[in-house]
Length: 134
Figure (cartoon, rainbow, N blue to C red):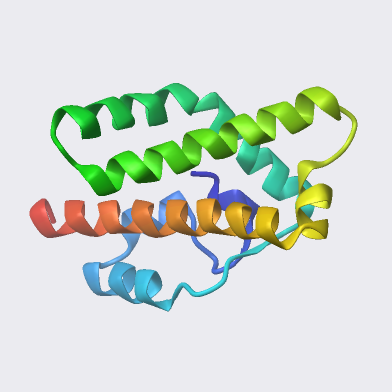
């Protein structure tokens, strides 16, 4: 998760590491809209999703093996999105994907869902760790 691209909320790995359980829960519950520094910053985050493609694929396989249907569907959604992003970049290597996404509400919605869910689920994981191993 690339928190350095976020303008708001101001979340960093250092903050997550030092935050109390209550602070983590408040931050997680307070996330409605994410604001990024720029479309180029979002693009960098999306490139990191491409680099992590195998991780998402592994999670999908584990979800199948352990019958976690919701996780399976989340991973399929992310993997399809990564494929869309890669295809766009292959066909338009000089252009920002985010410029195209901003012109198409449905695609922008996908980007926002991917990024929002990523931040929220990362905070959920940090909260779970804090609860189990304070």
